[in-house]
Image 1 (cartoon, rainbow, N blue to C red):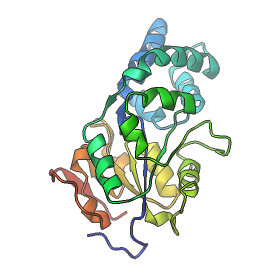
Image 2 (tube, one colour):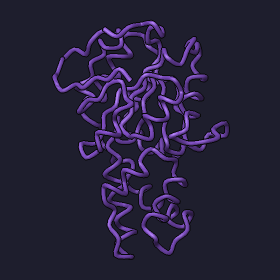
Image 3 (cartoon, rainbow, N blue to C red):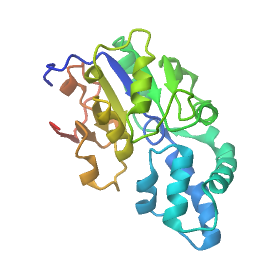
Amino acid sequence: MMSTENGAITHIVFDLDGLLLDTESLYTASSQKILQRYGKEFSWDVKSRIMGRAPLDAAQKLVDLMEIPLTAEEFHGELYSNLMEVFPSAKLMPGSMEIVRHLHSLGLPMAIATGSAQHTYQLKVSKYPELTSWFSHATCSDDKELKRGKPAPDVYLLAMSRFKSPPKSSAQVLVFEDAPNGVESAKAAGMRVVMVPDRRTDREKCRRADQVVESLEHVDLTQFGLPPLPAIVSGVETSDK
């Protein structure tokens, strides 16, 4: 069991894309649809550099990396149009319902902190009212109080402040993330992090996470002083960073 010198875990915050919902495959297909006109490929190397960023920030990074004759606004506008048609078809990631249900049963307040805008967030979760009912709120990238997106800590700090009874310390918040930018954001906020990276993610970029697992089904909650998931599956890496 993890030492509670920084305080027991009292609150939970989840990322959304690529963690709870499999939207990353939708982003990949929609981005490639645009890039192929210019003979470019939306490779994993490129994708990994923009994952977790706010939409316009990601678009700017992509346009710069790919050196295509579009502004960030133009690329984002076309991508947004493509995605609006497919977001409602987003599927749940393995173990997402089970871990959220379990944490809810423990009485832990939970929130979502996402790089998605409010409208796209609503589209993505539209098929899963039960899942979203277990969260007190969702902090999105177009929130008027949000100054900077991930990897800055702002979105996690803002999500924490909006709990009805906020934690006494950010160290009492456990974050679930899939992207290195998101892990950096949560750690910069002083929170503890479970990372569920894509299998292609460079392991060096996972080092700051407190725990790295293959899927949400493999999370070892006992490391954070919490009751384990009903089914215990091996495949956990831990870190004291």
